[in-house]
Image (cartoon, rainbow, N blue to C red; front, side):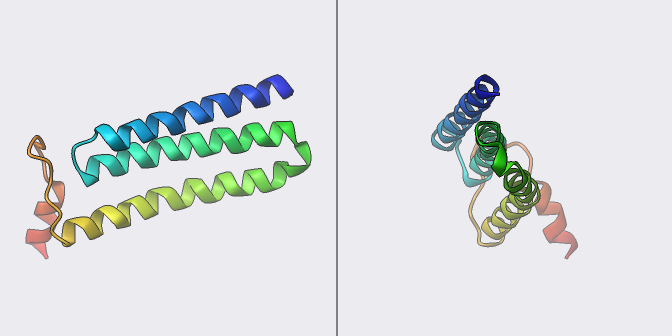
Length: 107
């Protein structure tokens, strides 16, 4: 259990580090949201689950945290992205598609 817990914590930490790198490398807020959200979701889940393996008495709390993260992260990133778009934050010059533009025209 200790080895599996340490492996999960390492993998989760790796995802968190790659998410941080994605925040630096991505060109605009919309791409950064995706890099940050996906990486932090998987990274946090890995670290929390690994910690639960190291401290089995915390398993129930860890599962509840994982469920909360799985529900809250996509909703929050979508809300942030939509707010940025409505606030006029431009897409990167390399962006090839703007799916929200069609929705704005329909409203």
